[in-house]
Length: 114
Length: 114
DNA sequence: TATTTATATAAATGTCCGCTTATATAAGCC
DNA sequence: GGCTTATATAAGCGGACATTTATATAAATA
Image 1 (cartoon, each protein chain N blue to C red):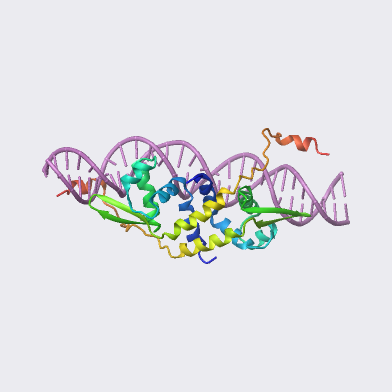
Image 2 (cartoon, rainbow over the protein chains, first blue to last red; image 1 turned 60 degrees about the horizontal axis):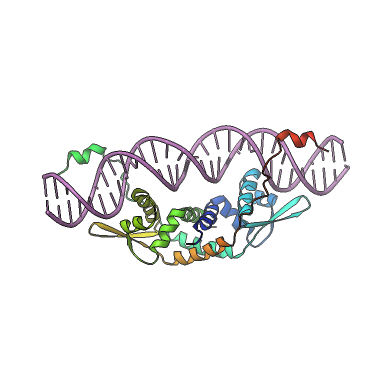
């Protein structure tokens, strides 16, 4: 309960499909931006944008090698935890609250009360 | 990589401070809405809103007892994983990309190039 | 049946954020 | 120094979502 804000931030950084794809793609390797762009189907600026978000929150670390900039997952444990969560997520089927296709107008129930 | 969407959804449901507070408060117990409202500092509709979000995604399960509706964490494992993530999160200090307090106007660098 | 208590739902609003388009930086090469 | 490649940054737009205010449902009780 100490610092909920930090946990929240971490979770909302992770709560994006594109960022998850990038994280999974990098895995325990080191990838340059161009390699990532080549794999995932996203524009270069968008990839850079997400990389920055994760770097700014220390999820990714950066190394420059000549003109290339390599990203790696700072803490490999993160991938394990994501594995666990992914497992959980698969067993979740959206509990759609039997939303009727058509809905009563607001006055109907009151009208027919008892 | 199978279903990133589900993982994303799970993470973004979790990525909210108020929902985290509620989850932590419930813990391994069963709490009625009114008990939750009494503890966290949120309006009743807001609490209901968040409870619904988590219920619809199977994070919470519901039991009615008379006029009271009790919520419990569906999978206690979730709390453990959150524990791990919380641990990670605490060791993350925002990598604020040494943003200068004042910034160059856009023409400055071009002006002084070389 | 009227009232009170417990909870849910609806509508309206403001904000954050992902994405696109356009442009800037930075390094390497001729 | 100009050119190309690799990457980052900025501005603008649109949609999603947390929150508030107001009201509806549902159960219990008098």
